[in-house]
Length: 71
Image (cartoon, rainbow, N blue to C red; front, side):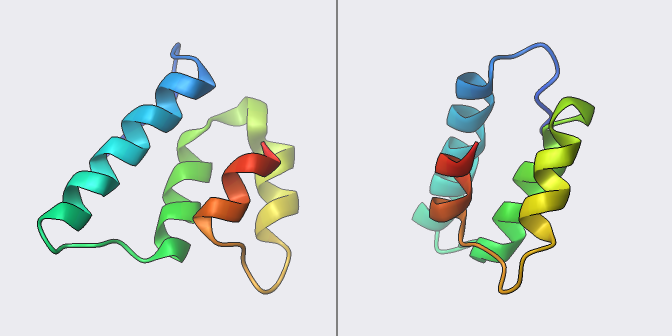
């Protein structure tokens, strides 16, 4: 699955991302939080590289619900 921010706003990207994973959870195929953090952050693109590196270098990794407000 590939979902990238591209020309969409961050809010649109987040809404689409959450919708996909909410739908997966609804059919009993939930995605672990850590996977969501990595997939979401790598889809943001180069503009957010410094943010991504800073957030992902922290241990333990953040949950998705902690990661998003940090944007």
